[in-house]
Image (cartoon, rainbow, N blue to C red):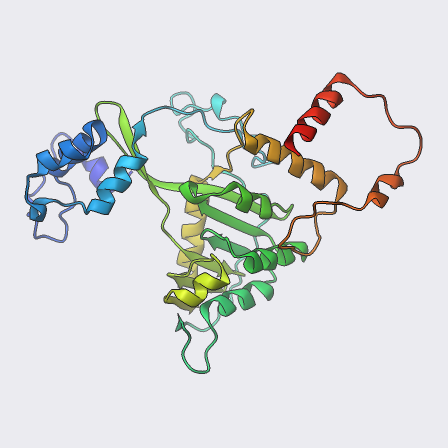
Length: 350
């Protein structure tokens, strides 16, 4: 809870008036009412509230469209069960309550199950360097810089951005196979199932996080996005900026700028990542009966037969070698009705 929220609980507090020209100006009741109208009745009601003139509108047309598309009915979803608790046990959030357990939060913080290195008392010298894409003469590109840092990681990799670049995902798999824990926080609205499948590795932990939410009195709500972007390697180097790990073509087409930081400022990013990790949620499971569930079954089936430390491949293996099926001797086990249903499911998927 922020200081302003705590002060609101004090009935004797007196707030000094803040004008719109003041840097401290943050809250506007007319703007809040206009956003409520946008959530409840749509763009036409919003524009009628703020006035006909575009100069009085505090939201751009793109923002109005974005909020309209993101608006939904408010619903209280149960907290998902964590796979790894503080002591290696599952965390069931249903048993926690701030009323009966004041020392606990309503949602226990997730565990850094892959481990966390000790912060070294010897810090690198404070330095700040700026890299651009297209790169300056004699300097590496932003994509090359990030890939080199990931390939030389020895302790931990903390990723705060959505990753779609196949080469970068391969670097993360190689680092995880070397025993380097990899923690990734992805924007909840941008998380794609095929990307999450590519990031699957025993030494990679992926979680999703959104932004803050705004709720109207009519039961409508809108949630923002996680817009922070930085990469922290070995608790020594931070790469922060406008980089987006999309594809090599994206790196060639768009202008990007990142700042590489070392020294004492890294502690602030370390602290911020832990806060965001504690606020994040596990990757949601696909809906029952959806195509995503069938894809999930197929991926689990392939993981049973193939090693998880294969080098990263851009293409899918559609015809696995039959020699792997011969490693089991003896007659096949009897077929159960469940196996028959699974066979029909796989056959229909093909």
